Length: 380
Image (cartoon, rainbow, N blue to C red; front, side, top):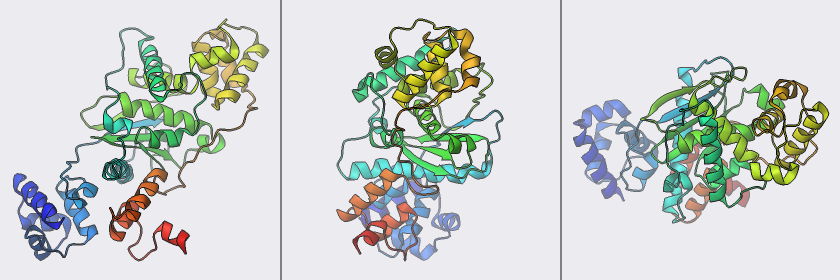
């Protein structure tokens, strides 16, 4: 393996016209260690090799396994509360989240399992339709139906949306404290790696756990379908302003239809009939959200858009609230600042099968080199 790594490092370094001395300065790895590495001799640590990979814009997990996988410029999509306040200090958080998404995809490949939907390129990216005022929403509904058909679930409630993103689509889900207080959720994507970050500071989600399902479904649309050449893409999400970008309107419609499919609503409520009586409208919202495990806001808005409820009641419904009488759906979000749940499972399996060393497993999970691995603690 060391010979393969040495060949890759030397080839990439020379292609970039980077001397060993310059690479040493970029990484703080001693020149003698880098020279030994390129000569195919052992001596470099996992952490040092990780630094070398990043300095050469290579995927660290892939390099550890003797594969050259470039790391391109990521695309970042931000979901905001009324005011945009992205803080550059959150860049490191997004880098870490994306690295988890990349590691998840790489380990999946090394384990020999079928590729996730994102990595397999199941869905085609394209700009949101904007040729008419309702075009983005229609596009979002269409894409949500495509995703549901692929999932083999046209009308039934979705279960754990966080697990769905990770296990079917290959998108790591993490919860992090962001300096950008008003950002509720962020998605980041590069090549075949992607992650969604939920902001720990989001008080709305803290008081309404069902809203996390909406955030995740919303970000899924951005990751799967939004095209971009890389870089930061600020998508303003103003709850009081419906005149927003086409990509954002598409993502809103996608999330609503994914969580509250028209076919399922018709099965539950009957055909849309533009109910105009307030108590009946409120009952429809309560019945729908209790069945599909959604927040009041998205349910009320979706039922109005699909003409189950008269559009004139939209503002009244949004302010009135509704009862939730169902069983809250399971949502296995990772603990704050913890790794992706599925990534931990893949690292454990890779470690047990001898694909990852102790040091490599600790490096991916960002565990101190002297600390026991989580599954070792369980075995004691």
